Each structure stands twice: as structure tokens, then as C-alpha cells.
Length: 100
Image 1 (cartoon, helix red, strand yellow):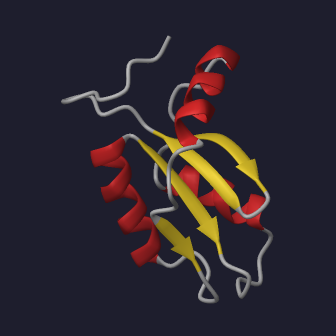
Image 2 (cartoon, one colour):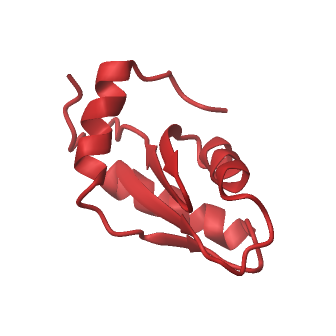
């Protein structure tokens, strides 16, 4: 289930932060395994905003697989460009990013 949706202004702010990020979750030929979902959940809990990359050897469409990952990781899908996607979920205990 995807959390509360973001406004256009919030997405724009997150996209600007995401430009500097390197991908921390890579999805390869195995696709969206439980290990990948668990890793994404853990990293997004710590960082709030993560970049995901779908590698060339993945058989599925990047937009589809990133959307499914966002749902399974309980995160907001901020943007998908090519093979990269940005996911955001606010850390309720220790928020790092202050949304406008």
C-alpha cells in the first residue's frame, strides 16, 4: 500500500535532492526478489529518499518493476526516468528531509 500521496511541489523538491544521489538498490536479472524488497525497505527507512536502478539484464519494464517495488516497500514513487526511479518514505521517528 502506498502511503499518502505527494504534492507536485513536494515531488519537485525531492527530485532536486535525488539528482545528487547514486543508486543504492539495483534490480537485476532475478527481478524483484524478496531480498531486494527487504533491502529497499531497510535503506529507505534510514535514508528516506533512495534511487533505484533497473539493470539491462532485467527482463521486465523498468517503470513497472519500480512501481511494484514502491508498493511492496510501502513508499511513494517520486519519479521514473529511463531505468532509474526515486522512492520516498518519511521516517516517523527521525525525519531527515523536511518537505515544503
